[in-house]
Image (tube, rainbow, N blue to C red):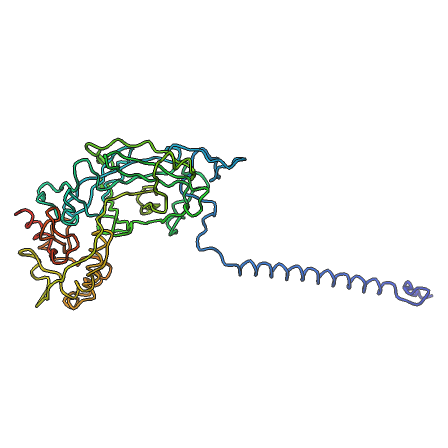
Length: 447
């Protein structure tokens, strides 16, 4: 008898196939789950797209970063927090390493070598000079800070009355450089301005003594941001533009292990004890006639990345001689600067004088830059090569021939016919002549 294959009957009593119904239900559940996963993935993509569409800030520095703060604050904290909102009065030493520099004399190029009044400066720093400042004698300004007043042989000349400083510069290196709330050097190299919790002011008073104080900026948001300035290479020197024609010139030490660093200022006034106050009426009464931060010339100064010098806070107080340009100039014939290497030099062209007359300048350095810019747009500009015109358009004097150069003095210079200390006008164009460095030196050597 043949064996028949017997298959189970999947039909229920109502004739419905139960296995197929189960399979269909399973497929429907899986489809629903797949739709859920797809929806979740789509939502995540949309969220990511929205995040990417949000414009990122140009600088990644934390909004809570500062350049300097009190070292009594905890790591990562930039503000004092107290129930009454009180801010203590702190010595400047709690904000960093403080150094005070000053200068009285100009070198042969009209720059003021800065010397130490107090504090310490790394010997590896090299030298610092202030440029673009007209330093005055009792009678006024000595050749706009450019002439050497008969002291070319010594390389310096007394620019101001004995005891009077032509410029005072304070430097502050922040404490706790590893604090996460402080800007990194990389961040500072990308910033145009930065936040700081202390701003300083130092001045020389009429009696020759120094007065100094500072404000904590925590409660004054309009006081907490200051410019960030970078050094720019110019030959063997690095130059930082501090505005109004004033520059800070840094010459790195060629051999840091064999240099004495910045020398002490002979006969320097006693350094003041500086306290950092909260902005309040009580603080103002203690300081007496304070000058407030918006009037300060202070910056965060960033050295080249490979210099090994940490960024610092710098504030300067310099004696500048403002004035208004006068004079008519003279018509020129032939090659204008051909006579700059002999005699008293060459006069200012009439069309350059017309462009400058009546303009006011805060410093002789700012005037000098404007003069060369005016030359770049005058009829005399056609006599210069393209490179020289480019220099003048940026406010720099054109280069002289190699035979007319002396040391680092490579460009044309301004000379006052009548010394300002003897009544000559600082900004009188008819009292100015253009000279080569070599001829300029000879003029003063023969005085």
